[in-house]
Length: 102
Image (tube, rainbow, N blue to C red; front, side, top):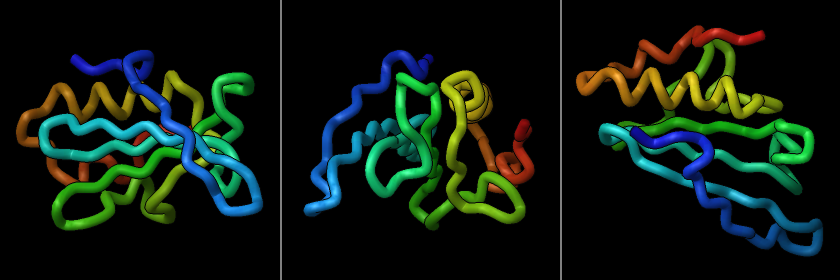
């Protein structure tokens, strides 16, 4: 089972405005992209705040009824989303909508 701690972040230049770090993994055919830094909704490991985007071959899987991408999410919540996808081989797009948010 893939865990948050297994994600490998890679730096991506963001033009003259700075750098973002992004890690991407695929679980049961669903891509999870986690990022932080310039232009992202998260400051990274130091503050335990990340941006998460989930999608499949059909496009973005909304994480709430109002947002496609969640920002300022801690590692524990990202792990919870990853666990939800890991545990259901027949994972459906609507299962993530309204995922627990603090």
